Image (cartoon, rainbow, N blue to C red; front, side, top):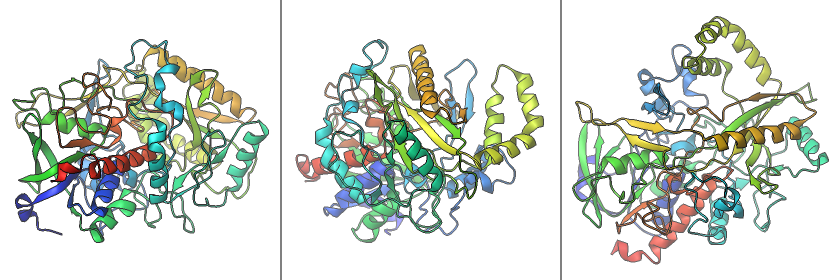
Amino acid sequence: MRKTSSLSQSKWDVIVVGTGIGGGTLGYALAKAGKRVLFCEKGKDHSTDDKALRGDYAESFFRRPEVPQLKHREILTRAGRWFAGIEDASTEHSQHFIPFLGSGTGGSSALYGGAMERFFEEDFTPRRYYSDVAETTLPDRWPILYQELEPYYEEAEQLFRVRGTVDPLRRHKKWKYLPPSPLSSVSREFYDFLQQKGLHPYRLPIACDYVSGCMGCQGFLCDRECKNDSTQVCLEPAISRLGAQLLDECEVLRLKADRSRVTGVVCSKQGQEYDLRAKVFVLAAGAIGTPAILLKSNCSVWPNGLANDSGLVGRNLMRHHIDLYAIFPKIREGFPGNNKEIAFNDLYVLEGKKFGTIQSFGAMPPASILVEEIQEDLRYSPWPALASFFRLAKPMAKRILKHLFARTIILAAMKEDLPYWENRVMLSEPDSRGQRRIILKYRIRDCDRARIKEFRERVRDVFEPYRFLLIKQAENNKRLAHICGTCCFGRDPNESVLDANNKAHGLKNLYVVDSSFFPSSGGTNPSLTIAANALRVADHLLGKARKAFL
């Protein structure tokens, strides 16, 4: 790797900020085409760190059970987790928490369960399902069609070596996956049950090269190198074979720009600032990190933040509303545990209404972690007596949860969220050291609460006569599941941050390729759409926008 001291003297073809699915995939594609690519990553390079914490949740390495706090920064960093606090100012009483997001090589893909689903065609014309929701900023259609993304979906599935079977409800069924692992006995029981009900289960597409004993490594760094995350699939090949370089533990402080171009990246590594130069700049720091960088990059010609003439940077924050269902199967002996194996989409669009997907959740975190999260949530409960009682009941709660998850199959019901102007990521005023905190404001509207309730009722009807426990998570703001939308793309510069090719309006050489470009959240996992779009943007840069590199 090039020494840090010489980086400021180099000029790259492309600087990519962030190494998750979007940044990793785009950087790999450009490096493969012969471009000089530099990746800037705020977290550690886990591929070369022998002190990385793999094979278990970061919380398992804490000295005592508790929710993540700033004092756990070193452990969180080594475990590939976000380590900075966020203020949730959505209610009268602000809460501070550390979100469950990735930070380090691979970004959140280093923690994901590997589910890589295509969006449905219906996701590209989202407004027609919500004509009665006046408040939402949901567009009539995306600036691109499903058909434009379809070849890139196929390319991304091959790149990430996705295994599974095709959803029977899909209109386009020509694509092929690698074969999935054998279905566990418990999942087979529920798969057959769904078919007998006239529903359409299938094997959930997973980016994983299964090895003996594989449990998916959902929520933590894989210790078997079988999870196909951005590091394994894109970043390592780009660096080892294609000449790309990585600057890890590098925090981007701001972008420098004139009125029409970005001219440099100011970053900090080990307390020293560097000014990095390139022909093209790509932000892929996530739907929280990317708008934060743009807002911190305000200057005389961009007083409200870089690329923010529309005032939309940070706005239209979305997250999936996810509930968990712990279902008691008939099989009692030889319970194999929970892997991400099956899914069905019979409730995705139903009777003119759009809800979302239902799929295997995968293994739950240890009970000791869950009870600490419950206790933390109860701190803000309007019933202080309940919080006090739970503190006394924690040992019993751990035993109950451990027993429950050892005997149930866990399914997740994932419902589409809608964009609203007021839901946003923003920055605080500078403190005495000039630092600005990230603030989140997010409120669920009454119409969305009604859809959450109806989705639960429909899921309950599907699961009967099985016994199950509903674990409500949809209303919890700390569950930032699949966050997106904070720098949406579109055709009108007054109603979007990016154009149809993910280039920032008003800037010739700035692109955004993480999930913040989504103008709607869809109702299923976003990773494959992020990867496919990154490949599409790479083709754009190498084709129509090739002059950017001259």
